[in-house]
Amino acid sequence: MLRKIFSSKVLLRRFSQVENIRSIEKELPSPDFLSKYIRKPSQKLLFSKIVLELQTFLRILGSSSLPEITDDVWTSLVSLPSFEQRTQFLIMLKQNHSEQQDRIKDELEKPEIGSSSNIYYSEGKEFRKRIDQYHSNSVLRLKRNEEDLPQLLVDCRFLNDFSLTTQTVFMTQIQKLYEANWTSRHPFNITIMNYTPDQQLSTVAQRNLYFKYGPPSKDKNAKFEPHMFAPKITSQSVKNVLPCDKSEAIYISWKARDVLPSKPLNCKAVILCTSLDAQPCTSSYSLAIMEGIKSYRIPLEKHVLLKGSHRVLPLAQTSMVLRSYFLGDDLGQAIKDSFLHVKLSKRSRAKESEALIESYRSIVEKLELEKNREQKKIEFLNSPSKIGSYKPTARSYNHRYSREERKNKKQ
Image (cartoon, rainbow, N blue to C red; front, side):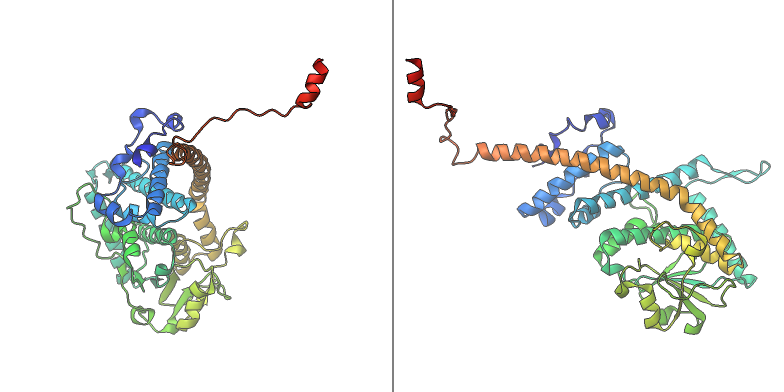
């Protein structure tokens, strides 16, 4: 089956040099995976399509555009039924891998910290230790000066109901929320609650939550110790996690009727929800009503021209606005600054994704069309009803005059 897939190299030759081609054979799943998940003819057909798409993706974007394709990644790929969903998943893998490589590159290219009279170097684990120490000092300084920000809670009770793509989006957002908090001079105390993962969500978390499971490492035996002030992850509900009375807590919901007042609220806990607020059954506004907690909306439309975009900010951007708000800064300026921070990178990622999907789809469609033609031709020639019984038929002509009329004209 795989020989037919690997034979179609002509259409892809112009997208990459031979020496940069990443061998797709090395990315294939283990024999245990094949025997468990690829057994039926329909599963084999889907598997061949995914191999073709993966090969095309690596040739267009480069051999180093994706991380190692493990059995966990293959499990995610075969669970996605449509080409668009698999493409979005591969693009998210590429973006996460690219961001991870950029972080590693920054650590290696900017190792110097301090003044010229006292220069020391920090790379890799040492770099993370120094940032951990900086983060710890910030947390302890705020506690000592009684300048604590409200505790930030992230409600994850809907995550199990979402698709694999949406789960990956929110897990990436939680990791970015930690990174933004990790390097801030005024960090939140973050707790991830109502987290009850199934096998799929657990796999997604291990692939994206670096603060919990550690960054990707070539040494699989290396032990990772989470930072003592890293976000706490618990399956407990709001009632058990809330550090105060419900009257002193608020939900941030994009469907809430009330907006945040210009003067900072006197509250001890702020709850965010991993929800797109697209349906009432998975809305943070419905959760706030059910829990009996007041909900507020960040007035984006009052300060930023959204141009029809979805009015739900990522978790890290929301925390950026809330941090400035509770520190006493102007709410409108905090909203504008948060959009200015992500505007350029978000626009470039969107354009890159759109261009990638279009070129990727056209090439995969050409390859699948050519593959289907070859398969039908082989099936036709190897059909038992056609072997030995096929006879070429004489070409038929439709004459303008009958045979008798033509003879009479000749006479």
